[in-house]
Length: 177
Length: 177
DNA sequence: GTGTGCATGTAAGGAGTTACATGATTGC
DNA sequence: GCAATCATGTAACTCCTTACATGCACAC
Image 1: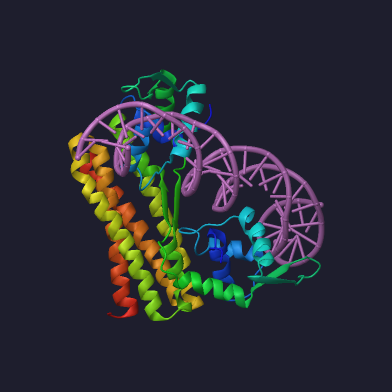
Image 2: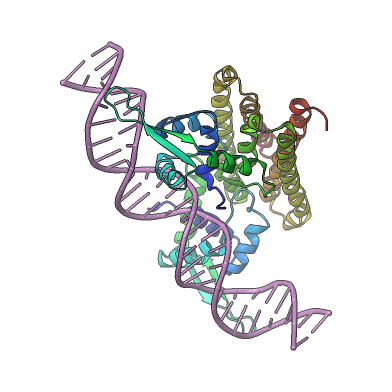
């Protein structure tokens, strides 16, 4: 009973809804889980091979025109492993690495204008993510997966709060521009 | 002009305020930057050697009783590299990996009680972090570093918002317990 | 015929955690 | 005497990104 690693959790989850190629999985991740659970080609392809070796997924060739293409699907074992993960009561992974916060933490050291610029960059960053997520909203709504939509809205809300905190702190701690 | 890696940024930053051992650096990180910028012994010690090779820090032996102990301090170059990083206008690293969100994203698949349990675990997680940060507040306040305190309060606020979102979503999307 | 997108992969290297190994000191 | 804490480090391993390499299909 090996625990699923980061990339395999999202792969099995997405394959639960239907067959996909590695390329498609990457595109889906980039438009949905990206901001709280990223994945790169360099992990997706090797992980697909590994999961197939472990019989959690199967694949079949399904060329599009003359272009080779491989579709992956969950096996029963894969489905079981996915469900077991979804329902397991283990501690939830939470990892954050935020350079904006780190710079702000050290901002005693720099001039107020620099601190303000850092905070503004941080604010832009989070506002930018929130905006990008907001653009995704109609697409996700049309897909009809209620929890995917709620997750997206959660992300929008969190990044908006983050940006708000930056804005407020700029004013309260560093005076008005 | 090598860019500083993750661990070196926090090491140089902390050494700006004074000499420390690797062990102390780890303890300080665990009580301050931990939740947005973690570091482990397995990275700190090798990184201290590397930074010394690059002449960004120096060290001296300073045994406490018979117990060997090595104190590290910034060199001028190290100070300059730290300042350059603090003021550089580059894109800010922001990485998040949140298993609570990932599970919630897939919650269409499971029974509502399971979805609610996942959300409750997520809420507890963030409430727990917020509570831990709140405990740190008096300590950080006494240190007199205004931005460290503001950062801590930012963390408390963010994790509290996170927990609030969980609570609200539990009620709105999954009905009352 | 050319660029964009679809499609699959590997190689290299850095980042990061965990477990292990060692040993002194301090307080109970 | 024993446990907790101070203190330094390495080894093994996973994770992850980035860059590279390849090639077809389709629209302009």
